[in-house]
Image 1 (tube, rainbow, N blue to C red):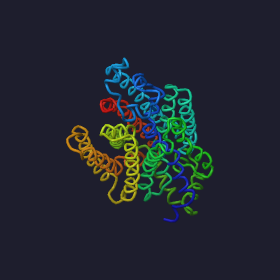
Image 2 (image 1 turned 180 degrees about the vertical axis):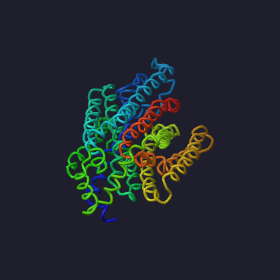
Image 3 (image 1 turned 90 degrees about the vertical axis):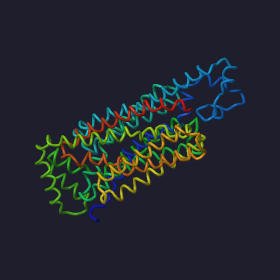
Length: 451
């Protein structure tokens, strides 16, 4: 084990997933906490403005924060309930469009994976990708100061492109620099850091930290900080030896990089394995079933509705009758559980196998998703039902984090030989992002009636 855990190896793993996967998670969740502030600033509800007296604060009376303007007030102020409902629906539609632009950018980033990892290498592609993150951060800040819906759209598009490309690069890089018996654990790391990014955004969105109307632009832009760490640390990282040997035909550099990764001089055995893999590239066409499996797994990961949980957690819990403050705290609990269960997956993945965790996790998700639906449908049937909805969401996260979260990303890299990984990753990741777009765009339609 000692020869695997060199500083070059550990640094490469951690910095890669921090700068890539962490940001994916951050940008999935960072719209949830400040959603009310964003809607208030970029898509103001004129009926809500009429409900406010000079002494009222927007956070106390805005229905986005849990206290409805009643129909009597609306009519007294020459704003009908129908007009108010129309404003809410329009607000939700514009906001969901901005949220879903993240997935549009993700599709574009996924489709560019093959070109980027072939042209620049795994390490080089992530270096270039960092600039998409910086552009997205700049547009987040501009959206706040300019009160511009279009800047928010561009920000979500840019960070989405970054995330789409990162989801192709990071699993590929961490698995390719790992030894065969460590690849399962290494393959879970991207998903682990996605969950850490989600949790970090949820915690920092607390009103006592950065969850303030005056800070949401800077708060959302904080996701770009890990890219600064990547750029500063990248000179100490090595390129994937598989890429260097098989795609660049540079055996000397591949040997040197392997020696740094393993901490030993004799890496001839591993080099021989890489050369044997290169000799089998002509068999690429026989991998159609593997491609079908990973595509179905990637689409299923998103069509399960997992991103609806992280895009709109607060809305879901408000629909269940909880206050904004309580909803924010429960959201953080969900994020914390997601991180914890990914550690469990990391520990047991070699024991139970990829397929076992994936199937078992999906079964749990179906059970708890059905329970969540029933809880929201019969919310007023008993006083304990809202709390039962929390249990269902927590159980749903357990199922996702065990298998459907990490396993598809591992399959993306393990099922294909070297030069097939880029094209296969592009196709499967693009389908993942397409499914995420559908969920992110159309899920709020079902939640408007709860607000």
